[in-house]
Length: 69
Image 1 (spheres, rainbow, N blue to C red):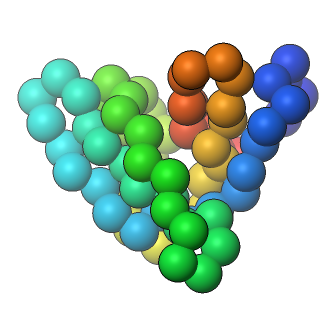
Image 2 (cartoon, one colour):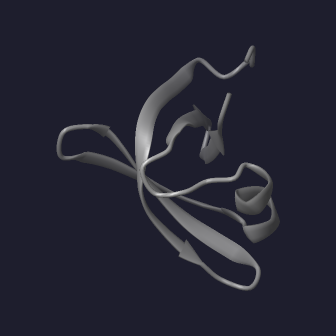
């Protein structure tokens, strides 16, 4: 994965709260350090996110996006 954002943090999905439009995803990027992102529910579904899976927090300006390999 190549992107222009310089801040890419790998982590493990530790919580997913699904809603009809948005889904809240919590990543643990280090022991006791968590990042929470709200993404569209369709994006969460297409990324096939699940608790325990690995993902990335991609931070650029005020946005936090989640991606997988």
